[in-house]
Image (tube, rainbow over all chains, first blue to last red; front, side):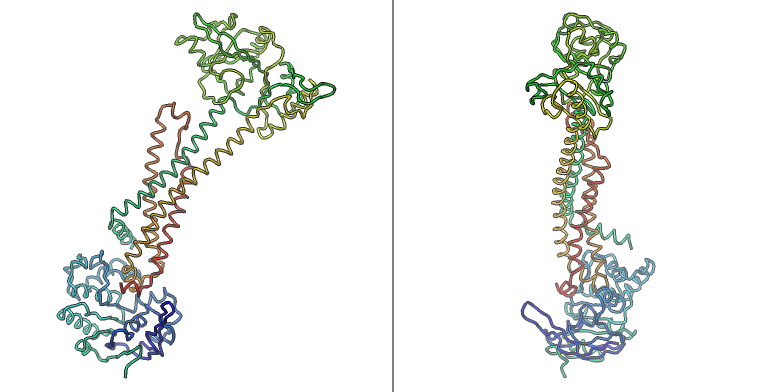
Length: 220
Length: 410
C-alpha cells in the first residue's frame, strides 16, 4: 500500500539546511498496524507528513497504492488527503468555534457529500465514539479524551483506508489514552491501515510492527 | 453546502463584533464620501450650468468698440458703429445663424404711482426671448407687431414687478419710463442668473421693442449684437464670418482683435464643462482615497484574521480543502465586509441626498439638488468593487498559501 524508496527530506532554514529524513525506505501493507518510534528530532513527524501527503519529499519515491505521489499538485494531494487519509493529532486540532458535529462534518464538505449522507455518517460516527449526546458541544466544553474521540471521528468521516495518528495520546491521561488505542485497534480490525507515532512502549505493543527512527534513518 | 458556508461566514464575522463594526465603519465612511462627493460634484456642476444658462443659452455677444489697427487710410481708434438694421440684415449675408438681435441698453427711471427705481431698459427684438431665456410667467414677450408699430409696451423682470407693484397685478398697467407711459404686457418668470453684461440682471430690467427704443431715445447705434449659431460647435467660425461681413460694411480690419469685443458663451461653457468634469474626477479620486483607506483597513484586519486562524486553515487543508476553497472563503469574507459597508454607506448617503433635496432653495441654488444618478451609482459601485476585490484578494491569497504543517504545529 505504502512504499518509500530512499525518501529524503531536507529543510532549508536560512543558510543552514537540516536533513530530517535521509533516505528512508519502507513498506507498509494494507491493513497493517504500524507504530513509529524514535527520539524527538528523529524525523517521525516528517515521515508522517510525507505519508499523509501534507508534505512532499525532497528526494526519493513514494508510491501510494502503486502510484507515484511525487509530481502531484497541491490540490491533487488535497484530494488524496481527503479520501485516503485520516489524521489524528496530538493536540486534536479541532476547530474551536465549531461544534463536535461540525468538526466531524468538515472533511465531507470538501468532497461534496450531500446533506442527508453527511447527517447519517456523522450520527453513525458519533455513536461509534460514544459521543452522540455531545454533538452540539464545542471542543472547549469537552474533555481531552472526548476531543480526541471527536478528532478520530473526523478522521473517519470519509472512511479513509489509512489512519495517521501522530502521538494521539500525548496530551491525554492514561485512561483516555487507552480508550483511544482501543478505538484504533478496533478500526484496524475493521481493515483500516493504522500508522501511529508514540513514545509509549505499552501503546506500541498494540501494533503489529514497530519502525524505529533515529537521525532520519531506520534504526536496525 | 451554501447554507453551511454562509452560516460559518456570519459566525466568523460575529466572532469579534466590535472589530467587525470598526472595520465596517471605515468602509461605510469611504463609500459615503465617494457617493456624496460625486453626487455633489455633479449637482454643483449642473446648478452652475443652469445659472449660467440664466443669462442665455447658446449665445454669442458682440460689443462694438474701437479699432486698434489702421485700416484703409483710417487711423486706429476709429469707433465702430453698427445700426440695428445692419444687425437684422446679417443672417442674409452670413450663413449658419439661427437667430440674432440688436440690443440697446440704458438706465432709466421707472415709476408706478409713488414708487420709482433706476433700472435698465433693453431695446431688443422678439428672438431675444429665446436667446436670453426670458420666459414670460404672465403675458407675453415683445412680438413683431409691437416692433412694426413701435408700440410703447414692455415686459418687466420679476423683481422689478414686485418693486413697483408689490402684491398687485402689473399686467396691463402703465408704468412711466423717463416720464413716458408704457403698458406692461408680460412679467418674466423667476430665473437664476449668474452672469450678465451692461446694466442690471434681467430680474430688474424692462424689455421693449428696439424700434420703440430708438424712436424714443434717438439712439442710432446698438450697444451690442446677440446671436445664436445653428451649430453650437461652429460658433467661432460664425463669429468670424460676422466680423468679416461687418468689416467690409463699416470699414475695419477683420483681424483687428479689439474692434468688436466678443463674448462667446459657448466657448466659455465648453471650458466650464471641462472644468466640472475635471472637478468631478478630482472629487471622485479624493473619495476613492477615503474608500481606499477603508479597504486597507479591511485588508489589514483580514491579514490578522488569517494569522489568527492559521490553525483552522491548516486543519482544513489537512482534511482535504483545496487552496482555492480557502482563498474563496477569505475572499468572500473580506468582500462581505466591503459590501455590507458599501450598502450602509449607500443608505447613509442616500439619506443625506434626500435631506438636501428637501432643503430651501437658498441652499439648493448653489449646490443644486444632488441625486444618486446612474453615473454616481455606477462609478461608486465600481470603485467599491475594485477596492473590495484588491483588499479581499491579498489576505485571501495569504491564507491560501498557508503551509499546513507549520500551521498545525502552532
